[in-house]
Length: 330
Ligand SMILES: Cc1cc2nc3c(=O)[nH]c(=O)nc-3n(C[C@H](O)[C@H](O)[C@H](O)COP(=O)(O)O)c2cc1C
Image (cartoon, rainbow, N blue to C red):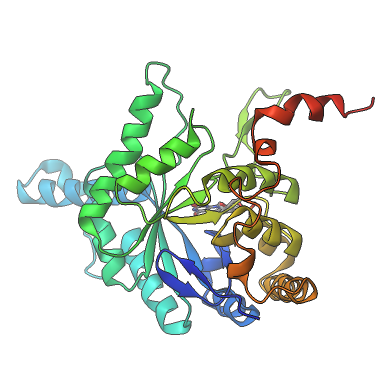
């Protein structure tokens, strides 16, 4: 069975790629994922806040030392061995590249352009095979327009594109007025792929204390339908990689996503719940299903039920909305 697929110009053995998660912090877990059949790995993110904080710390330290500022006396001397989060991240890419043979995708998480993005070049030098950019932006400023937000994505992409030669994949939120149009704009601006979709963690309110507290709930298979629809709509209309993230738990979820047109399917929650070895079970089931259904390759399956190829293309749009609602029997 030929399970190979193309991801950002890299030829992968199959479409199963663990997405950014704490599993990539541990080399042994990544080895277990590779042993189970993971075709590549996306690392946990290096956050803009972390990079900025340490850059500011170093600037303040060096500046105040330099001018002999009295406050400098209260600073602890920075040891020559001082390791920033960026240093740690770079060292981890380097170690992962030595530990496994699969492609390692580094991940940056931030919303602005500026100094922190210059570190992208270091990620490339450390051996990252590609770079995912997660613009986790909550549009809470009511004066900011949709166009401003789209421009922010483009600015970060353009700044990164000018830094690195490795492939770039943008992890997007589903909250654009026109997701599909945004993907085409990103393609035109130099993205090699999109990862659909970023999952926003919704804060809750503790009704006793009135504290606003973040809630981290893992996904279920049901959530995969959001990405599946948009991948089906985009498949065949753009030439960049379509990576599906969110709610991929079972072999059926993977098969559905590939039928819609996904080049790769990311997994996170399912692996956190079931452990790295679970990926092997899903992979074997995908392969078994293809065989039973007389497919010879993943390529043959890819996009067969995209909007362009579906028997009922309008089912991906508004047209069957009314029927769906009316089909519910209370
Ligand atoms: C504990 C945890 C940590 C995560 N860390 C990151 C991260 O560092 N960067 C990132 O882009 N996404 C991160 N994600 C998001 C996942 O990569 C993934 O996109 C999301 O969980 C949806 O996929 P799933 O339904 O398979 O879990 C994290 C998710 C979880 C649950």
